[in-house]
Length: 239
Image (cartoon, rainbow, N blue to C red; front, side, top):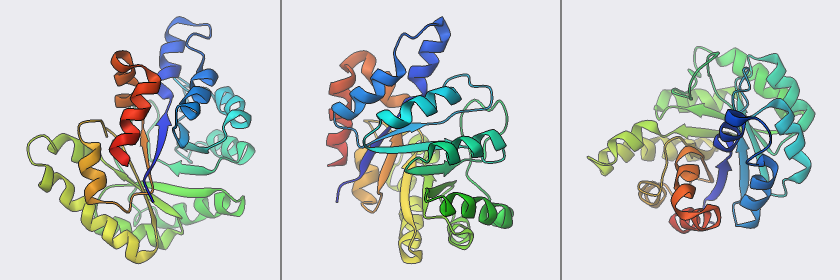
């Protein structure tokens, strides 16, 4: 089974919001992403709504025919209420701070064990698959199993940064983390700074990855290649 591609459309919302109005049309882009072959749509609403707005999430739900993945920090009760209202395929819990530019670390699943257990149980009880953002550290993977999440999302910025100089070394901790996650029965997602340059190597060495969520690089590539062609290029890396 090949790894699924979920396109993060936050950057489309950023471009729209920079000018006001509805250009580019976020909803149409999401529909077109699916039409061009992507197997999921990801959004990450933040409290300041600087890109994806809460209303966008509600408007997107009836339009998406593949998997809908909503990322965010559950310490924001508005986010929790939104997810429970929309009921996406998956919620990915990310330990962002208020005003954070982009996600830059995974959960400490040991320190926040009880909080994560309680929070995940709320979403699981609503029939929503849960995934939590984690660094490729074995003790954090073990902790993830303890909190009851269905999946983990491996935070891949460290891999992307080291890949150009030493791909094997960059991938090594992720291979070990994926092996442990499999042994523990956790599904594996991955995301952050994955690109056309580094994606194939990652998936070839960690074929157990069920889904990658890619936004910044993919949307940037569309400036050169166009949306349909770019999605096909990424799908080719995953096949």
